[in-house]
Image (tube, rainbow over all chains, first blue to last red; front, side):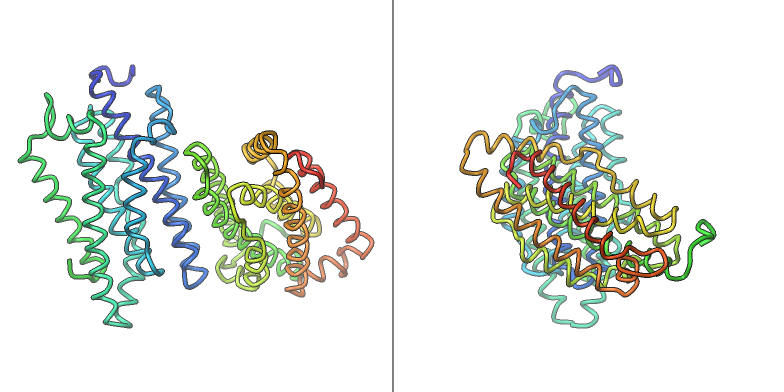
Length: 224
Length: 224
């Protein structure tokens, strides 16, 4: 921990928990995207979505290295979060290609915002690691283009996919809350402790996540 | 093509076809491994197999760059090989985790040997690109350890998995033959042309692939 002399023990536990939750979100996200690639309608789309999956796995590896530098084993740190995140994926199993990529776009966006928001309560070194890692570099522009094109060709799709995206949002928020209460360290970070948020701030955090979700829906050409 | 001044037109076509077939083998192999990760019995195994999938995708990206430098579009070059390779995967769908990783180990090994053998008939630059790319760096030692441990714990598994691996071998050889005859350029490479193999050499090539398969079976603790 020589890199972060400011880290308290509570911060250390919270960092490890947050990176563990993020790791399992990434490992599952990788699996979901790889599954979407199997549903792709052509080789170009299949390659693009497989590329997104591999990119998520690359981030998972960066988190593993970070956890190692903190003396933590990634596999162990993921365990407490498996149930919450698996249950999200079980409750949002896409029935076709477009549902799959809308889920990836909307779900990954919410997850990214959530982890970046929680990281605000960590020490500076780990905060900037998480924020840099999750920076949106427009990797998913392939998805927004594909979805917009599909809706343009069949307007009834817009309604169905908007409904689907709202369901993803609802389930993702529930998952975020479950992750937040799964471990005392994260709960303390979010709703108390010396540097933690208060409930009003927590409300503002979820409002920001909702706003960003609305913008992403617009990018897809969907009504939030 | 300034890199390979010795490349004839026939060689160029064969290189592009071979890299196209290899690309689709890698893209499908990525999908199969990512599917195996979903069947993994624990988080450590899941992470390991996802890591192997991401590594295969990294090689797919290297082939893409190579194809681009040859003025070819990877997506287009894959198309002629989709049926043969998809049919291999449909005919060898694993029913559980161990079948999945045995298939990955045995099938990837055969594919790697096959593409490296065919690359022997290309110009020096492309030959060494393929051979270096497919060099076995022991990435799959996780699989051999896992399979040996499982067989040690339940001896009846050995018979079932040996039968399964023999089926993979049979289907893979058929797939290799289909890939070889799918395109005139590859057929010419393998059974004729100025620098092509003759039928006796082709027989020796399949004998070498079979020998390597037998060694891999031994690594897994299976009877070939």
